[in-house]
Image (tube, rainbow, N blue to C red):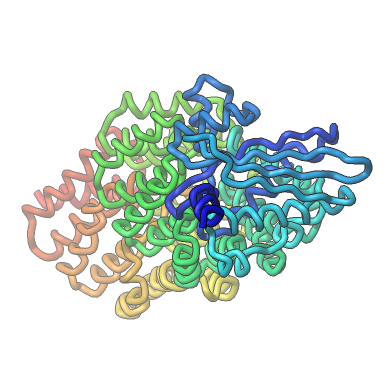
Length: 626
C-alpha cells in the first residue's frame, strides 16, 4: 500500500492540450557541424505531427529574445530557453543533446517544467552510425509524446519516422533548417538558395519542395512556385500527415486554383490539428478569394490566438478589414503589426494603401520613402504609386514609375512580377482609352510571362481596346490550362468572354455570361502582385446593361463599385466607374444626379494630363448636360 502510494504521489506530471513547449537548441558534443540546428529542426518536425502538443514558434521565440535584449538568432541555450518559456507562459523546455561514443552516438532529450524545474521526461537513444541518428531521434520523440500525456492512439496514428517525413540525408535537413531560419530573419528571397540546396541533395524531399513553392509565391514568382509545389504534391506520400495537409492545400491554392478543394483540405486540417495556426492562416486567404471577408477575419483572430507572432494573421486581417471598408480597424491592426516589428513586403504596401484611402499625401510620401532601396519591396510600392497617379489621370508620370518598377523586378530576375506590372499598366491605359499604349504594355507582359493573372490582365486590356483576336485566344488558353481554377472559371474567363460579346454587339449574351461571376463580384483577385482586377465583372455587367438600355441596372452596378472603396483602392475601374455612372444616369433621364457623377470624375481628374481620351469624352458629355 505504501509503495503504491509513493509512486502515485511521485509520478511525473503530464502536459495538457493547452500547454506550449519551448524547444532549446541541441547541445552538439560531436564537433560535426552537420548536427547544428538540424536535430532541433528534426525534433520539431516529429513533435509537430502531434495534435496534442504545441511548440512555441520560431517567430515568437525571436520576438521574445528581442524583448530580452538578445539577438534574434541567439543560440537557445537551456537558460535562455527557460526564460523564453517563462515569458511566453509555456509549460516546459525541451533540451536535446548528442555526443559520440566511439563510432556510435548517444542522443538525449529532457523535458523540464519551466515553473518548477521538475523533470517531466528524460529519454536516451543510441545510434550505431551517423546514418541512424534521425531514426533514433524519431524514437525518443515518440517516447516523449506518450510519457507526457498524449494518447497512444494519436501517437501511433501520427508518427511518421523522420526519414520518411522529411529526408534521410542529414545535409539536406541541415540546408532546410537553415533556410527556415534565414526566411524568418532575412526574408523569402534570401532563403530560396538554401531550399534549392536541400532538394538538390535529396530530390525526394517533399517538405523542402513544398516550402520552396511557398516562398517562390511570396516573392511573386508563381510559375516557379507552381513547379515546386507540383513536385511536392507528387511526393506527398513522403511526408507526415500534417505536412500532407499543407502540401495538398498549397497545391490547390498555387496549382489548380480550386479554392473549394483548398477549403475542404484546410477545414479537415483544422479539425485534425486544432492547435495549428497554419491552416487558419491559409483559410483566411481562401475566404478572401471567395469574397467572405468576415470569415477571413475570424480565422486570422483564431490564428493569432494560437500564436501572437503569426505574421499572416495580422496581414490578412488588415487586408480583409480594408476589403470591408473598415479603415480604422485596419489601421489599428497595422499598428499592432508594427509594434511587433513585422516588416514584410505587405506592411510597406499597406502603409501606402491606407494613406491613399485617407487622402493623406504626406503619409503616402513617407510610406514610399520607407520602401526606397529595399529589394523586393521598392518595386512593389513603385507599382502602387503608379496606380495612384494614374487613378487621378497622371498617366505620363505613372508610366515612368512603372518602367522603374519593371526594371527593378527584372534586375532581380523576377520576371513574373515585372510582367504583372506591365499587365497593370496595360489595364490602366485601356480603361482610359489609350488603345495603342494598352496593347504595347500587354504584349510586353505576355513576352515576360504566361502566368494566369498576367494573361488575364493583358487579355482584358486588349479586349477593352477592341483587339478581339488575341483576347479570344488567351481566354481559351486560360480555360484550357486552369480547368479547376475558381478565379479563372468564374471570374477571368466569363469576364473576358463578356467583353468580347459586348464588342460584337451582344449585350444580352454578355449579361448571361457574367451570371457565373455574381457570387464572386466582391472577391479579391488571385494575384498578390497587382493592383487591378477588382470588381471587373460588375463593371462589364454595367457596360452590358448600358448597351441593353437598362440604365437603372447599369447605374446600380457602377455605384456598387464606388461603394467598395477599400476593395478597389486605386484600380482604374474606380475612376472609370464614376464616368460610367454619369452616363447611365444621364441616359436614364436623371440630369441632376448625372451632373453630380460627372463632376465627381472631373474633380478627381482636375489636374490630369491633357489629351487622355476618357477625359476629353467626359468634358464633352458634361458640357452637353448644361
